[in-house]
Image (cartoon, rainbow, N blue to C red; front, side, top):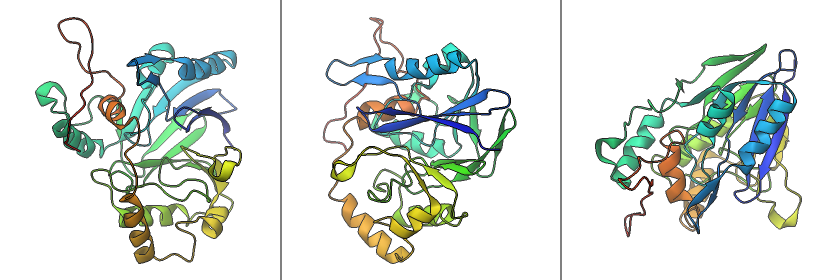
Length: 286
């Protein structure tokens, strides 16, 4: 049985959020949601999330899981808002604690923030299986971009997070804390060991060369055509390429607000005595 897959593209952050539904029971899950954030004003809004909520309500579906592939550095998650409106359990890989411990120091959160992943409803291990109606969702540990990255296998589809992009854009960077190019190579090789027809769904697309935005490909297409890690690329070649390329990349525009919110499962930092929540910008520290 194939799941129903609906993609919602958020052009401001080039992020694709997926709604995956069991057609038999109308139970569903959301992967990698987006909370709109205006960096100039520091204001959040919920237009992207509201579009998904409206679709779920229109189809009389029931939200069971809100899944994160990792602690994103390029957009804020809408997980708490979606949970408030529709229910569901917020999940991430259990290695999120390693990410929290690093960024607790970067943002000097002190004892105000736990670093055991307890902000999330459930921490997932490699090989865990979630049920969503008649669908089975298998968690696949795919570190490299970050140490806490998971992909999600749903029947013939894999939602790969930031491990891979479309073949003409390549692979994710590995220079964030805990990232590792050799680990990413092996994670991707594991994904590409699946049957040729396995569908792969990207978390981002940037439309290189002015082509249309797209986010679905296959194992066979990636093996043949990925510009960074096709079947002819060795681990040593990939690590050399990825390490050199990462040195030339700027930090993501929204990395500072995104990580501070996402490492808390989408919660904002505690409010100050004036009732306002503040994000920190470390100066000359990164």
